[in-house]
Image 1 (cartoon, chains in turn green, brown):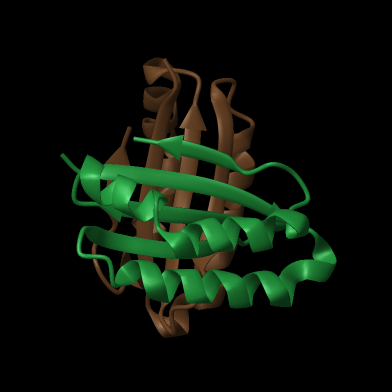
Image 2 (image 1 turned 135 degrees about the horizontal axis):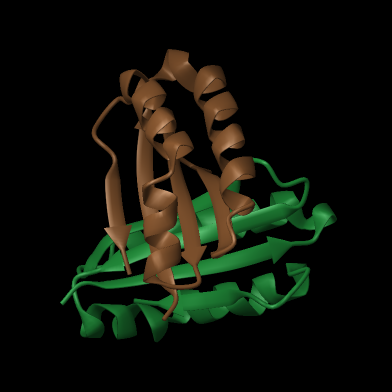
Length: 93
Length: 93
């Protein structure tokens, strides 16, 4: 059964460039995963704040856990945490 | 029980300004709905195409159907349809 993740990230203003570089690398890596159906980063069109959402679709539960246990995702979260204005909000469907 | 909608829209290149004007009006109107928890439009950060996602959260099923039956949403879809590059993909959770 398909699994969907929507992860909202609110980034500090001064961290935009650094965040987008880290995020783009993660998008490229994740899209190579066998069970990844789609993996995109979107930016809020009307907020004056740097608000983003990762919208992610996986073939099934095991594809999602393969992603969640990947070294590059762990590295991403380690590097992005100092750039966050607030804690991420991650919803699983 | 909370209801979430993720609606992906792919817009024709020449329709960007017109689409954003229509979408911003819809966002303002929808956020006034009593049962709307959040209603945001996001744009794909890394695509060269105009790809957007509405990410919408409602208090419950009746709040979602109140939104779906609103005149302004019907008007929005009537006006945005000619601006679409492909059919929207709408997921309900």
